[in-house]
Image (cartoon, rainbow, N blue to C red; front, top):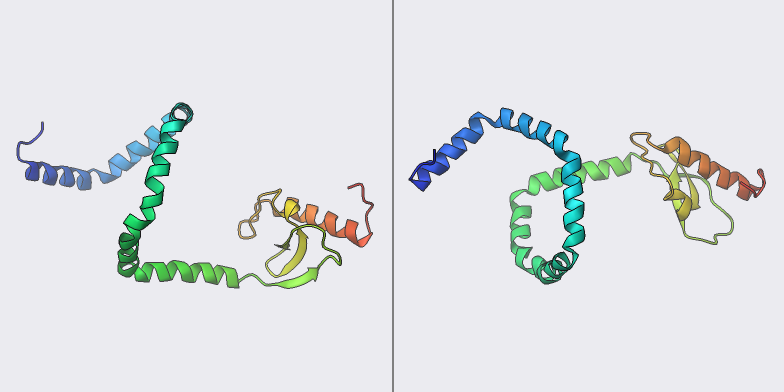
Length: 166
């Protein structure tokens, strides 16, 4: 039953939210899991049917967004300076933990190359097309065996150890 006074209504809503936060979050999570596929299907259908409207909206909205939100971003950075520094520190720390001991580089480079960490210390230089062909993550180990296999095949072929047909 809605209250007539908007201030009391707002306070009531806030109190209700704080008292039932855990239950609401659990319900929302289960609802999302049950209706996830339907929601995705609906979103795809909507996006397909409203391409022109979305494009015109983005063209009108996005160029001005940076200008209108410049002050808000600056203010956010000043208020949350400690949080931003913490995030940057973690990123830099993670980057510093990887070594850069170059094991192999091709003598002749004919295509764009990337350095690939075969472990947390050693790197080899392989073509970008191979490096981007398989998703891999050195920290979790996901895809590392597959990408390392491709990388070593490339190295051995270029060293003349394996035949070119691989």
